[in-house]
Image (tube, rainbow, N blue to C red; front, side):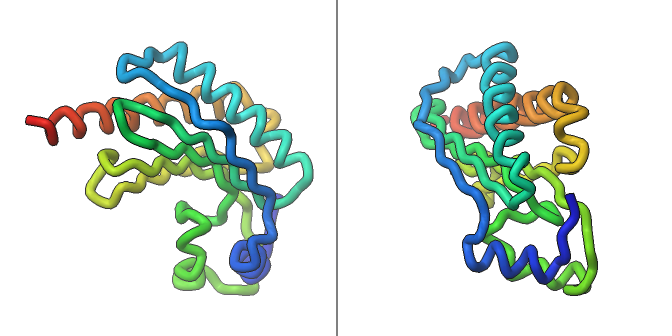
Length: 159
């Protein structure tokens, strides 16, 4: 999937994209890899259904994790910036350029880091279906690391 940079900016600014927010789930601080892998598998399957429409997409899974709200998002993008920062995209691209659409994993949590936001690009939309298992593995690995970081930062803040 490709998109012209100006079209991407226009669609995001006008909220012309698919969006789905799933019900919040509770995840224990001791969530093991199999739990994170199952969660990731579910998210990727939902996101791929959205991607079949060849439209920009945003899927959010709120978590209650370690006593705080954590938002896990899968978003289409053209750079590792969330839709909320779309105004900065023209700093990096020529508006007329046609570019590949990527999949970003975005974790929003007070204790993830100083900014409360972590973004990882996980692959290209055009490869998502063919490489679903590797996409799931990559996202699960990053998500496991992010949740561990939130847990450790929360523990340090209490001490």
